[in-house]
Amino acid sequence: MIVTSVISTDLAIALVRAVVGLVIAAHGAQKVLGVWGGPGLEGWTQGITRMGLRPPVFWAWVSAFAELAGGIAFALGFLLPVVAAALTIQMGVAIARAHWGKGFWNTKGGIEFPFTLGAIAAINGVADPGAYSLDRALGLPAMGVGVYAGVLVLGVLAYLVGSRTMGAQGAVKRAA
Image 1 (cartoon, rainbow, N blue to C red):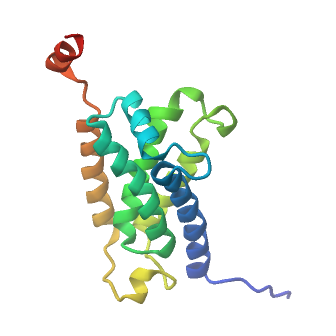
Image 2 (image 1 turned 30 degrees about the vertical axis):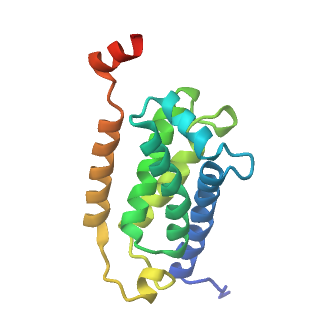
């Protein structure tokens, strides 16, 4: 019998979480700091405005810092169910507002990339954070799927409220 070495599942999950978290944080840095060809907060606020989220400045800050700070926290395994839910929502909004109409493949701007990142966030949100996480190192109690689901529901509700149309009163003000 041939025996091959494998790494632990805890380490494998931590490595995936680190890579995905840092990729998401880099996207957040583009939005917050304007690095790597990103729009910065002013440009990102304009993008949020075009996407129809209200109020746009609030949602620009929330989404940009969810990616920057959330990506770093995710990479470290810190407050994992909470952060994973925030990132799952962020990727869902990206799909709904920017990628859905472009098909599946990333080469055409489709949902492939944010779907993959969101799926990895969701999987980590319902899983144990593992031995290689800041949650475990700090001795934080496992929050579990209930916290993930609760934050996910609150986030979806907040998104729906922010996605509402301006209504008649806002349309009248714009026309004036």
